[in-house]
Length: 341
Ligand SMILES: Cc1ncc(C[n+]2csc(CCOP(=O)(O)OP(=O)(O)O)c2C)c(N)n1
Image (cartoon, rainbow, N blue to C red; front, side):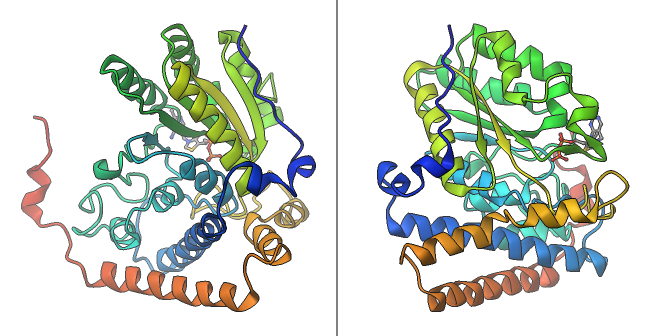
């Protein structure tokens, strides 16, 4: 039988958890900084979208930062990452240059995909960041592909794949989980359950609301974690990644999280599918102030250090916007590059 990962109550392990996990103070500060960078970067992207500097789709990760940051921190440089279309946060968490991400959003030639992809197509092969994808669930089998490749080549790198809970109703999710379990592939599927697939609540679309339990059909290791808590994200993903590296076995993890903004920039924050009160209630669990409070309480940072980080990140984001603004558009002849036929 597959193992069900131990999912301890966050409260039980809170006081000891940093030491238990072997995390240093500087790593904890880095968790905070990365979450803050994602938040400020995307707030600015929203403003630039409003000024029509960014066109097309733009899905913000605001509210979900703790999942991407905690999960990606649990990886090695040679591990692979696949994201869906809410991908700016994952790209920043992996250490991609904010300038190349902002330039990609602006459709500029200096963007990570030469301005040809935009918001949903962040990509950096040097960091094994295998891209954002716009087709719901379409990238899940690709993640099994790199995991298969690692195993076939005798390497011990692991693949992680992020997707939303709506993707877990796609046929391709089930086909991939079946093969990943059958072939024992080193892949961790991370379902970011933010409760809504566009305007459809989980309860209205899924027969089984505990998404992680869908793995039981494939006798696969599985578990859920509090996706509003960066340490919990790190702990759960580290456990699953270590398991994949040691035993070549896949895991399905469900991160319970929430998005504070609309589905995409063109959608209202609440719409008709959720109330303003619900969003306000969820904001009480905002992973960023929650973690700041914890770091302050434990004496790991001072308020002055937090203010300094805020100022530093503001400069990084300003520089990214200036860079994107000043960068050239892709030249017309580039239209014929990277075209198969
Ligand atoms: C195959 C496919 N069907 C429909 C869409 C339209 N669509 C875009 S996003 C989305 C909702 C997906 O929600 P979820 O996977 O939970 O991710 P979240 O937006 O919550 O991060 C849908 C239906 C699509 N892009 N691809």
